[in-house]
Length: 183
Image (cartoon, rainbow, N blue to C red; front, side, top):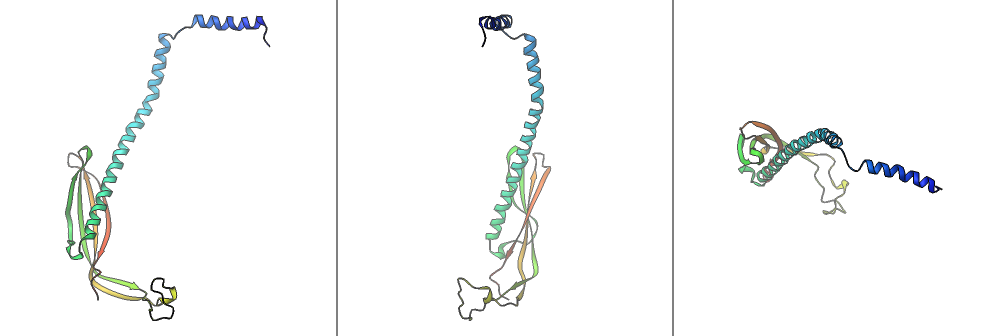
């Protein structure tokens, strides 16, 4: 426990500090400002990197959305309405930051496609069409080959900057089959 003498020594020390230092000097303020400025340099560099990465991510998302949209539109068409050929321009879209997106289709019809399947034996006792058992299927696969009934669709999105310079290209592949045909 501190006596009265101990308390007076503490108050004398802190009291003299408080009376000597009631504010900050100009030199201390300048030094603190320089330290903060130096600490902000790497932070500002990271912010610029983050902005560029966000722009790239936004471009990729737009490309993927265009691929998906055009692929779905093509697959909704009747098989005979999907045009065969290379570099067919499907769509041009203006994007942010002066970018433009061009969607192209390369479509080839596959000469012969072979389908393999295991037929089902519907005449077996206990056959349930809503829940067939493995034993209901024939163990030997059957095959059927059909000419010109599948098209391979290569859809490509090219991204151009405001000066019409190619920045990136993304593509997807899907297939369309003429399922109404029989061999």
